View 1: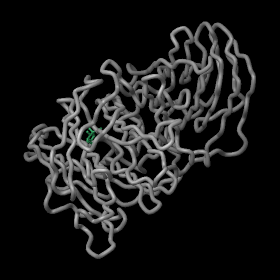
View 2 (view 1 turned 135 degrees about the horizontal axis):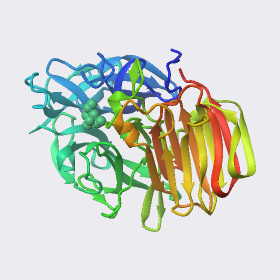
View 3 (view 1 turned 30 degrees about the horizontal axis):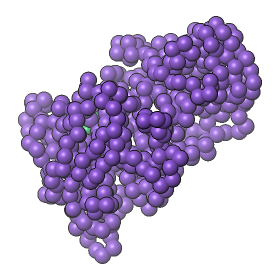
View 4 (view 1 turned 90 degrees about the horizontal axis):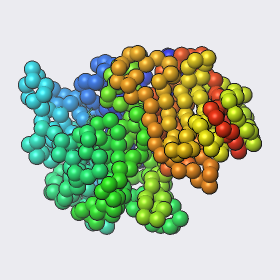
Length: 484
Ligand code: FRU
């Protein structure tokens, strides 16, 4: 469908109508990237949680499929993952050679509907024998039950050295990630716990554990443990021996995959072909105000899919994220380019748009703040700025269109993070897609994802420097095609 509503992202995934939150069950199989996602089939706010379904051949163009796993009388279907059970370890195959896809998710059970806060959570499975099109809930559910109120978000993957399945879950209030192991996806035994560690300000949700290739060390991987903390995410780098995750991130360090306000519940794809970099996808929203963002008939979108690599400087590991390459197929026509330009004051870039990609390398001004204004009009703009004195990169949406729909949205309007220059240069790769801005700085060492709700006519691109001179080595802007 052509999506023409105000604020509708044109190359980020959003459901045609109704509410979504976390991506679920990311799995690659037979040339298809599956995206399941938390979805309310009945409305445009959170509720009746079920798994909806879309597929893609390139992680950019998506085709929606019928609802995959609906809630039932007993429970809602919360977040989880999908695996390809190549050896039919589960025994769900009905004929030789058939390969089951198995979804592992949290059942959110409310025994007495008049007391929605008296719930229970345990882990269930469902299987598909038709490449993810239709699903059957396993009759032996739950497969893992600790008789806990909060225990959720299973990420399952195959651990080849130990020839077993590993399930990563969280105990949200305790700030603990748990590891369980299984041979058949049906019986699980406890392996170890990780945490509390790092950021324990919010409840922990949506853990993931994966191997990430290390730049400059061919064939070398490190393990990365990801998890969400209510409004933001963090990651730890270390080793996993099949039982225990050995964290190597110093205890006084918090590393974040994204420093913007709108990146949550990010998880990675299972079963990618050998040599394919891991791909991370998150929910581009924030529980502080998620249910009030001014969009209809849908609410919320996914972030861009991001390829992952790790870089080591001294003893510090950094996750590098790059928007997946296939996004380049959306570049329409010849780009507009500036080279070697010195900016004092402000200067309009000779292109406009709310659906654009911008790449720039620049020497920031030595004094004062400099940067780029996007979705810019006379008074409005989202401001990406750099302050050489503090080495801080800031994204500020306080004057970027509508923000009166929720106090928390207005209060939470700017995010700043330290980005040391690379050989005195700052490199930015920026994606604006109507109501979502993603800024990747210095090869994706720092990423900020931010929602904004600008009027349709706010589409200027302006470079500015408040005090000293900023020198732009190059700035390139593409208009991107809609994928819808
Ligand atoms: C994270 C989360 C998960 C849960 C799901 C419910 O955003 O709270 O912990 O499984 O959303 O929709």
